[in-house]
Length: 385
Image (tube, rainbow, N blue to C red):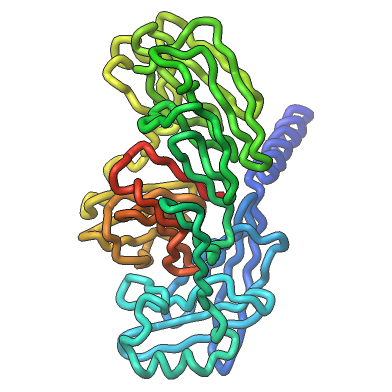
């Protein structure tokens, strides 16, 4: 009997720990508007909230990021015809996402189909809360003859220059000379890390710029590092750099300004969300970390990207997003001029010609900055946070 009680207590403790670790609160309820019933599931997670709205035999998955208070859905507008089935959820009297319209098994944001269905357009005109959605006031801030910023984006921006970086419209000079191929440099966790390009053939320190205050600090190394070194990747805000000439792998934490050296017998390699050990010989062929864990899913698309929350898939330059909480539908985002994108939470950005562009559900497509050198120099790096 005592044994059964002890087993029961242990099982209960394990269950409580699992619930605590999951950090997910689930709510289920209904909203009724104009004789329409909407079934809602809310999952409040650590860094975002997931909403699943079921209506008209369709399920609308929504991720909401960066909300200080958990936003309950207070009202839902809906519209349907032979082509589209659309909803607009209102979160505590705020619009946090565009109108979502199903056509077959694909969700379209209204801004991407505006003007294609007159009856839908007429209905949207009746939604008073939507009238101020996605209004753009684009204003150019010319930094110099090469770079211009546009203040319509409510984000902090940093971009590399040939002598350092520009961080939030302030130039941070790091180098005494122009550096055109700053291969050993990277943005991570609101920090900018770069090799000391004031040196010529090898270097013995890294510069770090804290983007929150633009202060510069350094990390010294005992032995000189070759400029043939390369960045393998970033894991847990630590930068991994391999020096093929000296056969050394460095692990650098820019925030704590600490640097570690891997064993001389092997190097650490990150692939499919786990660490392995590989030989130094393999790393000499520029062995970059592999962040994909897709296991050959979505083979019908030209390219597949992923982050913690979504799969991003590209077909004929059409960019779609698939919510990992609900994979039975896809969401069309935009027609791309390129097939290379970078992703952060619920927004993405890409470069085309001399421009850096940003996309999210609430802003649509935005021009962030122009830089006349972007077309010609692949080593120019940018960071939005």
